[in-house]
Amino acid sequence: MTYLAKPKIHHPDLPVNALGFTRRDYEGAVSTLCAGCGHDSISAAIIQSLFELDVAPHRVAKLSGIGCSSKTPTYFLGNSHGFNSVHGRMPSVLTGAALANRDLVYLGVSGDGDSASIGLGQFAHVLRRGVNMVYIVENNGVYGLTKGQFSATADKGSKSKRGATNADEPIDMVMLALTLGATFVARGFSGDKGQLVPLIKAAVEHKGAAFIDVVSPCVAFNNHPGSTKSYDYVRAHNEAVNRLDFIAERAPIVADPAPGGMQEVLLHDGGTLRLRKLAADYDPRDKIDAMTYLESRRAAGEVVTGLLYVDPDQGDLHDVLGTTHTPLNALRDAELVPGANALAAFNDSLR
Ligand SMILES: Cc1ncc(C[n+]2csc(CCOP(=O)(O)OP(=O)(O)O)c2C)c(N)n1
Ligand code: SF4
Ligand SMILES: [Mg+2]
Image 1: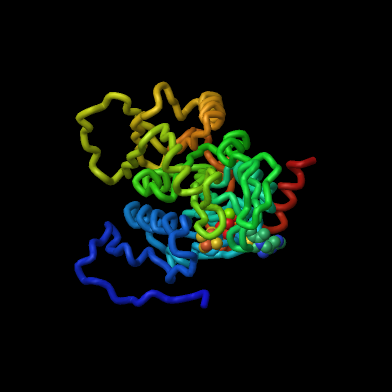
Image 2: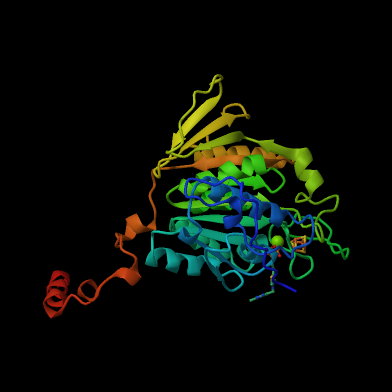
């Protein structure tokens, strides 16, 4: 069975957000993933983030490719728009949808196989173009759905469940996203919701390509000793560069009694990021520093998590193309067919 609807009944006293929705209005069908799969924790973090941000479910479009990770949009935001595309091809579908209607929140959900293996080309261009979206890779270092082959993020030398050894260097999705021009780059861990929820909220409010690599252990095929994507490894080697508070514009800003090591970043959509620094001298506005820091910690065997880089001033693909603010399906004939005179004037302008 692949689809189990959740019963509609819920407690009458469940808290509601500013729109009058309960958290349950942001849920989807019952998950059919393996018990303990990291992907389910990410779904829970997405539900909590959008509920707390007061984003109406019908204002969200969730798009995915193929994989256990790409199945997860069925398990959250059951009242949102959804498109389960082809393996590795979610970014081009998302780009088209985002260009057709800029009023929605675009949430791309993918896996390491979907984005770093078959879909690497599409992943590169959607970040490079600055499509306004939140792109989440649920990274377990393995093809979970097809039963445990190495993905392009699998550790060199790691052993598959069947005993084969991986001979290839892994792709670091975060480093790649930095190189490709994403303007919000973060890494989280499915087992740390306290860090992941503010990262997702901040990414939703960010204008431009926001990328979050979430280490998400696959309990069936890649949770063994020797995997850097296992629960034990990440818990033991997690190096958080910062802790995040995300404050939406409408929430009252409270004074923080201990401002030492605090940094604020204003986002264009009105939110404020408050970064509590844990690593000395880490500045998420400096891309070169971010790359150097990532490499040095990787060499030490650590998994760096937190908001690694943000540039709130770059804008997005709509700014570059100068597209209309009106969703394409709301344009009228007069705008779509301006007539022979307008065409002649346009042609003249090109002569
Ligand atoms: C064109 C194409 N090639 C191969 C497959 C088989 N396939 C389905 S899911 C998958 C890998 C999924 O891995 P990942 O994106 O890491 O997702 P996970 O299941 O680990 O969450 C593959 C190779 C496919 N569906 N389509
Ligand atoms: S096979 Fe792995 S990735 Fe897929 S549902 Fe099971 S634990 Fe999750
Ligand atoms: Mg995977």
